[in-house]
Amino acid sequence: MRMGGEFKTRWQPSTRLLIGFISLLLIGLNACGTAKKANRHDAPLLPGMTAQKANGAPKPASSPIATEDDDLSDAEVAAIENEPVPAAVSRQAESATLETDDLDAQGLDDESGAVPGQKTHDIPFEFNRKVAAWIEYFSQKDRDRFQRFLDRGEPYREAVENILEENNVPIDLYYLGLIESGFNFRAKSKAKAVGVWQFMRPTGKLYGLSVDPYVDERRDPIRATEAAAWMLRDLHREFKSWYLAMAAYNAGVGRIRHAVKKGRSNNFWTLVERKVLPKETMEYVPKFLAARYIAENPDVFAFYINEEQKYPDVNLVKVPSPVGFGTIEKMCSIPSGTLSFVNPHYLKDCTHPAKKTDEIWVPVQYQKTVEDHYAQLSLNRAAVKSERVKIKPKSEKVHVYVVKKGDTLKTIAKKRGLSVAYLNQVNHFKSGRGDARLRVGQKINLSATSYQQTKTHPRKKKRRSK
Image 1 (tube, rainbow, N blue to C red):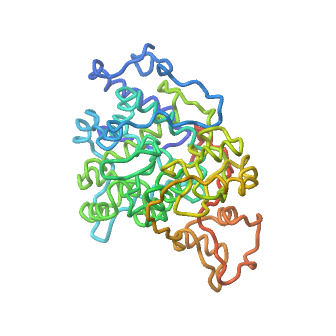
Image 2: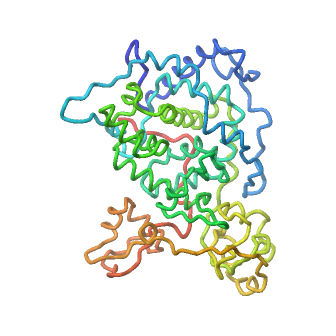
Image 3: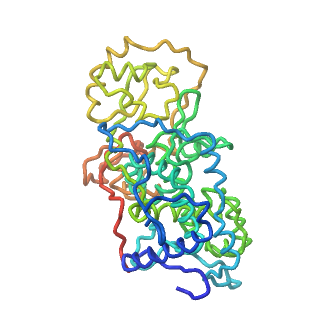
């Protein structure tokens, strides 16, 4: 900790209570000057305030399938894009003295995003006035909307965290989806970025996401999360910093390259101090850290978490096309709305009308039933007039790897930034499968054809100490 400058520390179990106390103290002090504007509750949420569960907090649902009745309004989408900078940030950041050193003439200073004892892909927690101001904003002034974001994201949280972990990126990047879209798969920005991860169409295509009038895979919980993981991993490889990777995700690679060159630093906080980043991007990482801090400690801030709803284990299942989801659900005794929930990327609640067969996500408990009804479903194709759509095969560069001479699962995994265990899983190889069985020309799947939750991720995660 540095006197007269910003509070700055790593997130470690031994300092967690201290960080929480300092955070609440700073927010409480900031709240004194904004008491009339902040949304209040009836009991102590922060020093000098009182707390209770958010009014109208949803009760645990009896169905394991969540429905998305509470989509973001146009105003909420715009609010995410143009989130106001907390007054405390604009007042305090100007005079803040960050712990950064000027570079020597030999090169850039580096912020690898790691400390001794941490995995290199862990995202450190930096606590400073910018982060504190965003904690105040989300927990006081924007409580109701932040609660809706938590409600909407919770059913997907463990599924997303598993996919991120399987693709060798930090599971904390789940909270990037939270601040990008409020976990609304139907979110669309003014710039036409779509889905939880807010992919522009060209970027989505680059990472293997198909878009046409009937299917937009930028809304697919599994495919889009894989694509976001791959993109963020590529950005981290270039910038060697998760903070800068997130900044590039927000502003674009070119703008961050320019900022790094102009600011002569690879340290996000240095670039903030030197004011070479776009205004929105300077708030992006603090916003992420604040959202993560609140969501991992909901009781401290009196937010309600419904942990009853979970995204189910699913497999890709071949079905006739076009067939309406309602028809499949009725014939196969699947609860209404289930297929729309696990396939939000289908824009018409119907399989692709330009295809004779299609593959959709189906909860594993209904997979055999759907497969057994294939012939029956073929007789119930929907009368949908298809627009002229050229169906392009999935890019092998993104989704498939063709085995070359000398390749092993280990070398393939290293080339693509994946783990051997993940390749075993998505290719349905038996655990411990030997590399000697690979043959030249064999196609290895690089993306999932199923999602099976392999690990439970409790909301409050224990972090390693040094």
